Amino acid sequence: MKIPESPPEFRLLFDGIDPERLGSIIAAGGSTGGKYRHWSELRHLDPPGDLSLEDWWLGIKLARMADSHPLPLRDKEGKPFTYAMPDEAQRAVHLVDQGVAGRISISESVVGKGNRDRYILSSLIEEAITSSQLEGASTSRKVAKEMLRTGRAPRNRSERMIVNNYQAMEYVRRRRDDPLDPEFVLVLHEIITRGTLDNEDEAGRLQRPDEVRVAVYSPEGEIIHRPPPAEELPSRLEAMCEFANASDEAEVRPETFMHPAVRAILLHFWVGYDHPFGDGNGRTARALFYWSMLRQGYWLAEFLTISSILKNAPGQYATSYLFAETDDGDTTYFVLYQLRVILRAMEELQGYLRRKMEETRKTEALLRTDSGLNHRQTTLLSHALRNPDATFTVKAHSSFHNVVQATARTDLDGLTERDLLIKNKAGRAFRYFPVPDLAEKLEK
Image (cartoon, rainbow, N blue to C red; front, side):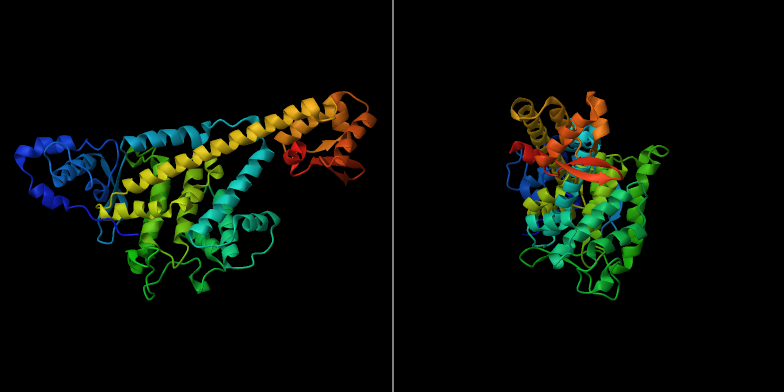
């Protein structure tokens, strides 16, 4: 990976502008095909009309500056980062509002508490694994899932990273309603890194001025980012927390409004830019992104796994940071990339839910036509498919179907003998529960 070529300096371009060409230059600012291109991409294209590449870039920058907003995040020279909301970003946040805020179409087979908990667990596991793999964890997904589902202790550093990530995701879920403060961030980092660092003293604290400052390297070993000095980290962390919580002020101070998804994305960017910790910065940034999304009402973010998408194209992830750094602190590149990632994660969730709903429909159709079960047993199993945490009793089954308890007991014991229910004694009575892999057993 190479650091993208920096654009020509805006001040020099503007100072050397030909007044007679100013109208053409300004008009060229909208000639981008709807894409938010960096100079390193634009320089390979043909400019409109008789303009030079430098003229075209100047027109684009003038148009972007008119739509840009300063951020409290500042670069190492003290210059504020900025962001803009071009048409692509406006469309993306609209789709995020429709989807992740809860209008995504989920049938009752998914909304039921038991299934909801299962899908959240599955998503947390997937995010924990892929976020760790982004940072170098080498355990296979199959082994990692077995470890998290069974609760066995991790055997090596890679497995410990995954367990930590899972616990961190649970932590931000529990604290979704709490404001962000430095202690919150430090505790989160300690959870993420405990038992995985060469120097355990670095877990849960900022880097110190007397330490060698961490840097970001490309896969080839080239330094691609040097974060701000450690002396600034405490004040920068305070500013970051204030930024993260600023959505609380939007009603009384409308000028503070920023789209919630954009705020979550920029919080992610902030941690990545400051790189305040010796290790675990990326995992902390992604966990805080989830916290911000959940706190601002995007409940479906619990089901999204952004790291699996980032893992498939880690170069694009890093490049979106570098585009911002090399283009006068314009974070719009990062915002647009992360919005695309969220939309992709939404699409994958929709596809997953469609597959699960179709599986449920097929299984229920099979039950009705060729199961060898009576209608009472079929009804019970249909309910169990949609509510895997359901509990059944002889008395309840008897009452619901208006049959004697002996018949109800025969129904339930028959399903137990076919390994479709689990029978446990509770006091003097028995309770029946769906087996964990009920859908798979019914298909067989």
